[in-house]
Amino acid sequence: MAVVARLLVALALGATALLAACTQAPAPGDPALAPPAVPVVFVPGVTGSILRDRESGEVVWGSGRNLIAPRDGGYALAFPVAPPLGWEPRLEAGGVLEEIRLGPVRQPVYGPLLEALEAHGYRRGDLAAPRPGETLFGFAYDWRRSNVDTARDLLARLEALRRARGEDRLYVDLVCQSNGTHVCRYLVRHGGRSLDEAEAGAGPPGSIAVRNLVLVAGSSGGALRILRELDRGRRYLPAPVGRRMLQEVLFTFRALFEDLPHDPGGRFLDPHGRPLEVDLYDPGAWIERGWSVFAPLAARRLAAAGRDDLFGTAEERRVYLARALADSRRLQRLLARDPEGFVPPCPHLLGDGYLPTPERAVLERVAPGWRTLYSGDRRVERSSYLRALASAPGDGHATLASQLTLSPRERAALAGEPFLIQGGHFELILDPAIHRRVFEALQTPSC
Image (cartoon, rainbow, N blue to C red; front, side, top):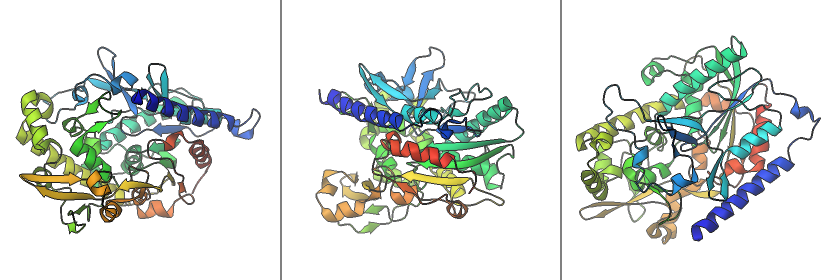
């Protein structure tokens, strides 16, 4: 009953936000209803796209049932850490997640934002098969993969949109939420280039011109909360009803590593609040501290499961981790710098800087290894000193400092002050005030 009550409260809040967005939409005849000339593409965050089985069409992620079943620890979503040559993923993106239904209960996700933009004159289209005159698109992607791969796919879709519109150069606005900020910021710098090509200085093609870059609840500087999830797994509903994604499953999602804190210095404390020098991007630190698949319980579970096809051997897991961490650092450094000739689009920052957000973790030696404690854990919360050190103002996922992280040229191009309201990382996108601010940002002709 507690789960149903929680879902009903969420539904009520979502419905209220949607009603407010509708009642504040422009009236017929309002100039804002004139069809926008520049199309907008919405890029969601991790878990924000539906995933389907290519052969059966079954929704493996994106339905209310997926939050409860199957009781597989999320193994159906795991990406192989050492895929064989020629391997193709079984799952594919099936659309942006607009709402989740669980029986009679509906929880809005991204639908209210898209509907609010439609009310302002945007015309919904399908980015997989765009047609002239369509100006509002959701970009669905496989959020388990690297953001570099996702940026390449987004560029291909934008090129298809350009051809459908019959334009030599496509001007487009991007609205990017959470992990989508990494995808969008990489795309405007390097298009669909590989890390090697980007490091060599290759930029995006001249056929795509991003005009406005609207970042909603972004984590441009990464988030320590990601380490907690990689270390402990994630639940979407309270136990024992909610399905759990085990840490070994999240370990296979490359995009999560790319959302680890980009500035790893000073992230760890001892139980007395004294700083500990631990390199978050050193694979040895993960093995020594027993994080994620290297925790004794996870290692025993993997040995019993016998799923080397997904999680590899112990050595393959170490190799995978080393590469995931190294590539993440490469991506983060590319996002922090301004390539030669880079002219950024107009950045607009929309977020929340009012909620306690994980900033540091406490490492405690417990025989035979270590225990890692995070903001919100009872041991940390009982000490006002540790609690203050372990958290910082933010949206519950990314600190305010992370949300405001931009390169020097992006900061110089900022279109006004950041717009901050209290709402939380996952709930912010439902707020009518955010919908209005997104629409206002899209009216910016140039920085």
